[in-house]
Structures are given as C-alpha cells and as structure tokens.
Image 1 (cartoon, rainbow, N blue to C red):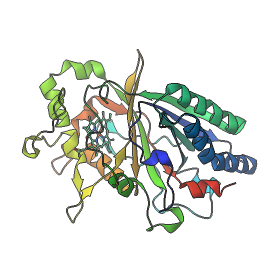
Image 2: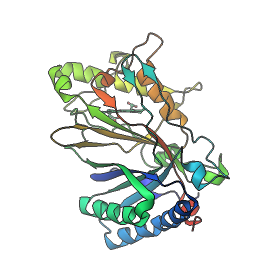
Image 3: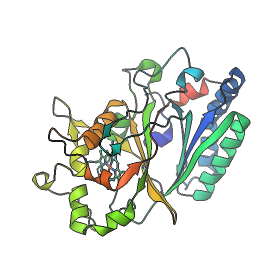
Image 4: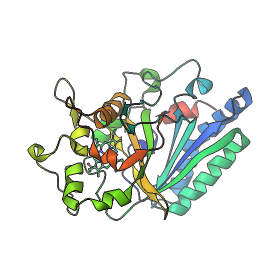
Length: 307
Ligand code: HEM
C-alpha cells in the first residue's frame, strides 16, 4: 500500500497542535509551498529519529477550497467543502482554510518546536488562522468528563477506515479530514445531573460503560453516530480529537480521518438533523461548533513528488 502519513492512523498521543493557515494566492507562493510540503516527511523522520520515545507525527493536509491552486490537474474524488447542516439553533458552520498542520506526540516542547519550524518555513506566504493546543485530560476524557475515543477502530481496521485505497489510484494512501472546533457551555452542562449527562452520551461517566442498545435514547450521542449502511455494515471514522481549554474557553478539537468523506458527513447529518422523528443529538445543546473545515492529507509519495 502507498505509504500514508504516519499520523493518519497512529494511536492517541498526550499532546497536539492544530494549526490552520491561509496561503497567499500567487504562483510564487504555490511554488514555495510545494517545496515546504515535500520536505515534511523528512522533517518528521528527523524528529522521530532524534526523539524515538516521543511518538512524534506531523500530518499536513490541504483544504478543499485551496486544493486546485496546488494541484489543478488532479483532485481527490471526494474532496468537497465542509458539509453544512442547520436545524433550529443547531448549526454546522463552514469556515474554509487552506492548510492544516496536525502535529502530535507525547511532548508539548517537540510539538511547539515543529510548529515554529514549519510555520517559519512557510514565511510570509502563510497567515495563521488559528493555533489550538490539545492535551490529554485525565483518562482521555473530554472536558464534559466523559472518556472520548473508546469505540475508535483498532489495529489494522484503523487503516481500512482512514486510508484511501485503490478505488482512487492517484490518491491512494491519502485521508479525508474533517476538523471542527467545538466550544462547550460547561456551566449549563454541569447544572444537569450525571444521569442526564450519561443519557446524552449513552455511556456511564466514571466507568465509561456503554448502555445496552435498548436503553439508549434516540438523542444519545452514541446512538446518533453509530450508523449502518444498507448492507448492515458499520459506517466508521477514525477520531483523533483532543480537548483544549484555558480559564475562559474550553471544548474539543474534533478531528475525523476517513478513507471517504461520506461517513463523517452522514454522522454529522444524523447528529444535527436527527432521526425520522427529529431527535437531534442532545450533546449539541451544550456545545457549539465554531469552525468546520474539510481537508485531504495526501500520501507521503504524493508530498515528496511536489519537490
Ligand atoms: C463517541 C464525545 C463530536 C462521532 C463519543 C464518545 C464521546 C464523544 C465521549 C463516547 C466514547 C467513544 O466511543 O469515543 C464527543 C464530543 C463531541 C463529539 C465531546 C463534540 C463536542 C462528534 C462528531 C462526530 C462524532 C462531530 C461525527 C460527526 C462519534 C462516533 C462515536 C463517538 C462515531 C462512537 C460511537 C459508537 O460507536 O459508540 N464521542 N463527540 N463525535 N463520537 Fe463523538
């Protein structure tokens, strides 16, 4: 299989940088960006060699709206704008950006160092849109207090779920990424009982035990995101989300990787638009998506050929 960027399927880390950037629209800027992108796999390899215990990964991904500037001749089959759904007050916003650097490892100092190095290589051709620091919170808990990531695909299934195969030969080894910054209303969340919170996730809080299917409410987050296709197969994504927060705002950097853009889109639709009776995901009553971006993370070979 064409080599995918290591961060596409790697296990969860304790620290991550989510950096979004916009590029100057000019032929010179594109030429410069091609060089910077082509060097990223080697830069990652250097960090990994120098700090073998840090489990260091750089995933670089190109925004849907910028893709044609970089590669006008060829486009990943399913790369499209971030899907927007609206249901009353609940909205998925679309805030396009050109480039994503998803840098993660066990060490914030290394992630920081790599962020500085890569953004300085991009120089004046790039404008920083947002820089978010994700960190492990207790036992991989989200700021709501619930363990996040438990039902992620495991082992080789992670590759099946997240990496494009021969169905799109020019882009095999790539991955579709959807990124949303959610900001939580923890004052409101902490006012409801633990039982109400558990019903919203369909899992227990302290012990992280899944409810029986029959006990899950139609509005439960794990009910709205556990979907099956017409043949009864599970529809899956690989999540590398991480909490962020300081004393004034907190939430989740939600990030989904997929071999197709469709599973994320179906899940988001199910969360917002709800079931046939209109039961939306009640988690969305306590958190709001402030950003929404669609990217493609090409294979290592594709990046190296840009030089
Ligand atoms: C499950 C948190 C947004 C897809 C979960 C779980 C938690 C959680 C705590 C249960 C444990 C686990 O299996 O990971 C959150 C929070 C979100 C958020 C705090 C936003 C603030 C999303 C979005 C999607 C999504 C936007 C996809 C569009 C899933 C899936 C599962 C899951 C597929 C596993 C369901 C299962 O098979 O049981 N999430 N999530 N989540 N979430 Fe989310």
